[in-house]
Structure formats: C-alpha cells, structure tokens
Image (cartoon, rainbow, N blue to C red; front, side, top):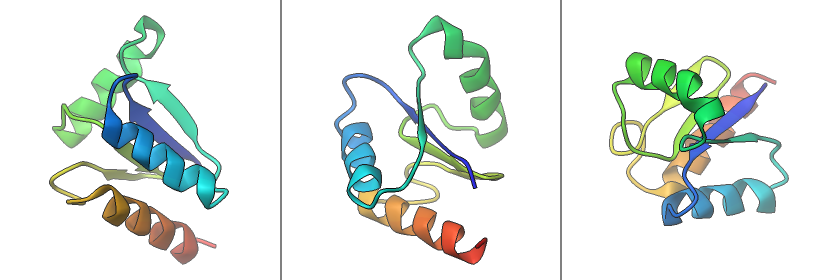
Length: 88
C-alpha cells in the first residue's frame, strides 16, 4: 500500500512524522507542498480533505489530517500502521 506524506521544509511535525516512518522502515513518498510541481496534487488533497495544515498522510485511499484524524504525530503514525496492517 502506498503512503504519501505531504510536508513543508520547515514543519517540525513533518520532520517528526518522517522520522517515525524511517525508524520503522515504512516506505513512503514525501511530497513537499511548497514546490510548484506538487501544487495541483496538494490542491486536490486539500479539496477532498478540507485541510490546509501538514503533515497530511495519504495511506491508500485514507487521508489522515492533523487535528481531525490525529491529535499527535505519534497517534498519526500509529493510525497509519494500523491501516497498513489491516490491509496486508
């Protein structure tokens, strides 16, 4: 199952989420939302999710949004792991 992590360069929460994924050897694609090449993709995710803040996690067809889907970075990571394990 593919994971896309929507981030910005200076977001400490994005960095923390990335570190959780890397420490657990979870493969993901990082999408820097500030790069012009990613604008259309991020606009679509924002439209579907209603979120403007990052990190946003796309796990298959599940969109995890800060302050709605998860309250802490660790919680977002744990939810991602659960979705992955439920789909294996």
